[in-house]
Image 1 (cartoon, rainbow, N blue to C red):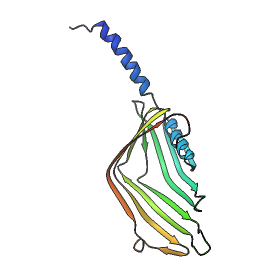
Image 2: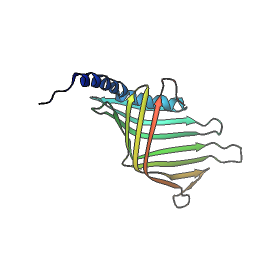
Image 3: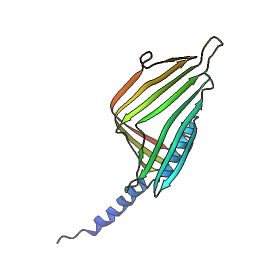
Image 4: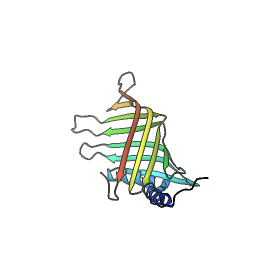
Length: 188
C-alpha cells in the first residue's frame, strides 16, 4: 500500500478550489437572462413565455422584433421554443428548433416605391449549444452539422413571388463557434 504525501494533498486543494471558482454552476434562468439582456441591448424587443419543469426552463413563443428606423419597416424573428437544461458539471445545454423563420418588412422610401416583405428560414441540423462559466463570464460553444438561410417568401407591393420565381439559399456545413460574453454592463 502506498502513501500519498501530505504535500500533494495541500497542493491539490488550491487547484481544485480554483477550478470550482472558474466553472461555477450556471442556472437555466441565468443563461436565458443573458440571452435576453444581449438581444435587448442590440435593440430587439423580446417577447416570450417562461415555464420551469424542475430545474429545466422552457421558453416558448420567443419572438425578436426591431423597428428599422433609418430604412423604415421592421424585422422579426421567431425562435419558437428554447429549452435550457442544467448539466451535472454546472453547464447548461440550450436546445433550439431546427427551423427559425425571420420576417423582414421594408417600408417604401419614396411614394413611387413599393413595400417589400420577405420571409427567410434559418435552418440547422443537429444543433448543440452549451453554456458554461459564470453569469459574469459566460462561454457558449455551438456546433451544427449544417446551417442554411433560405428565402421562403417574397412580396413586393401586391405581387407575391413563388420559390421558383425568387430563389436565395446559403448553406454551411461542419459549423462550430465559441463565444465569450464577459462583464455585467450592457453588451454590444
